[in-house]
Image (tube, each protein chain N blue to C red):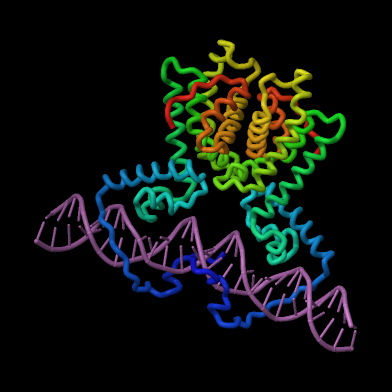
Amino acid sequence: MSPALHDSRLRDGPRSPGRRGGAPNLGPRAAAANRAALLEAAREIFAADGVNAPLSAVSRRAGVGQGSLYRHFPDRLALVVAVFEEQVELVEAAAEEPGVELADLLGLVTRHAVLSAAFVDLVSAQAPDMRVAALGRRVGTALAGHLPAAQAAGKVRPGLTPDDLMLAVSMVAAAVTHAPEGERDAVALRAWELLSLEVRLPEGP
Amino acid sequence: MSPALHDSRLRDGPRSPGRRGGAPNLGPRAAAANRAALLEAAREIFAADGVNAPLSAVSRRAGVGQGSLYRHFPDRLALVVAVFEEQVELVEAAAEEPGVELADLLGLVTRHAVLSAAFVDLVSAQAPDMRVAALGRRVGTALAGHLPAAQAAGKVRPGLTPDDLMLAVSMVAAAVTHAPEGERDAVALRAWELLSLEVRLPEGP
DNA sequence: CTAGATCCGGACAACGCTGTCCGGATCTAG
DNA sequence: CTAGATCCGGACAGCGTTGTCCGGATCTAG
């Protein structure tokens, strides 16, 4: 609809004289630091309050201005995708390490369960963004690569498909997300047990 | 903080003279009809858009004014609880019918899965409302009552507890909610299969 | 038929969030 | 040292949602 109506200059004249503070330009090094701070803040806020948490909270926690947030991540989805991409890369890296089994990968994904649940929310949103879907596929690929070995070792039922794995992950992620803070590990372990899948949970939170 | 600032009379004088239409009073019969229409509309809207959907959408779909909505249900939680209560009563009624098995109840709950998922969201919210928690317990009780029979028939693993059942329900509910509209039944069946639990899905949507 | 009680519908103000815009501080080049 | 480029922080307007308020239509009693 009517474009540019958001531009206050078109409504109020050149500008109301409100006082505005200028902020230092710390150079391109600070730009990268800001981006990192925003990503970390977003990871924490999203994990605590879900991916619909106010972005203003993210910029506040990161200690940067709103402007910087929107400069680095034009919209909410860009920020969310950036956060998830970090997690996906962690899983992919783990999948390449020698001696790693399916159970370890499932444990790793479970550790990121709260974010995973939010991720699943997005993957299955009514307008499944292409970038998000691609990230989901990368996780699926990483897991599927270790499925044959697990099947050969008799650790998972014969008929289990890669899609089943993703379904199981989303189920556990949801369960963990809904569990009270202090019982998440126990709930996760029980959930995997109900699914008859072996899991090795990595240390700490 | 400063109370009553919401009251426009304290700010703008007695009232701005804006024209307002009056609406007919159709008597107490209409009041009950309104309440029913609101519940039905809420059920549909919540199922489609989640329990955080705008309440204005509910009143619009029900074809009643905002005032009527807030008169019957003072806040969002009251409306949500009322909707869930209907579903819980359905499950409880089914549990009392002769010849019903655990698999039937699980199927029934699965049919309300989208609402169940929203329900789980609320049960595990940071401020778990007492009314919501009580509803959750009622479902748990209904399911648990049929657990011994299922165990005796060898249909579920020996160590399964009532809590496990609720956990499984929440997992399936999450999976179904995230599945695309057309695949929900298939996903639900597969999810129950991964959990090694028998389920009999009732007809229709 | 009249007076009063009831209660419906929707206008409306407050509020929180999003995304934009710009003054001005800092950095770099010459 | 000066001029220009860069980019940061936060003010701010628009927007959608919530919950309140009231004019007046309908119903009921006498």
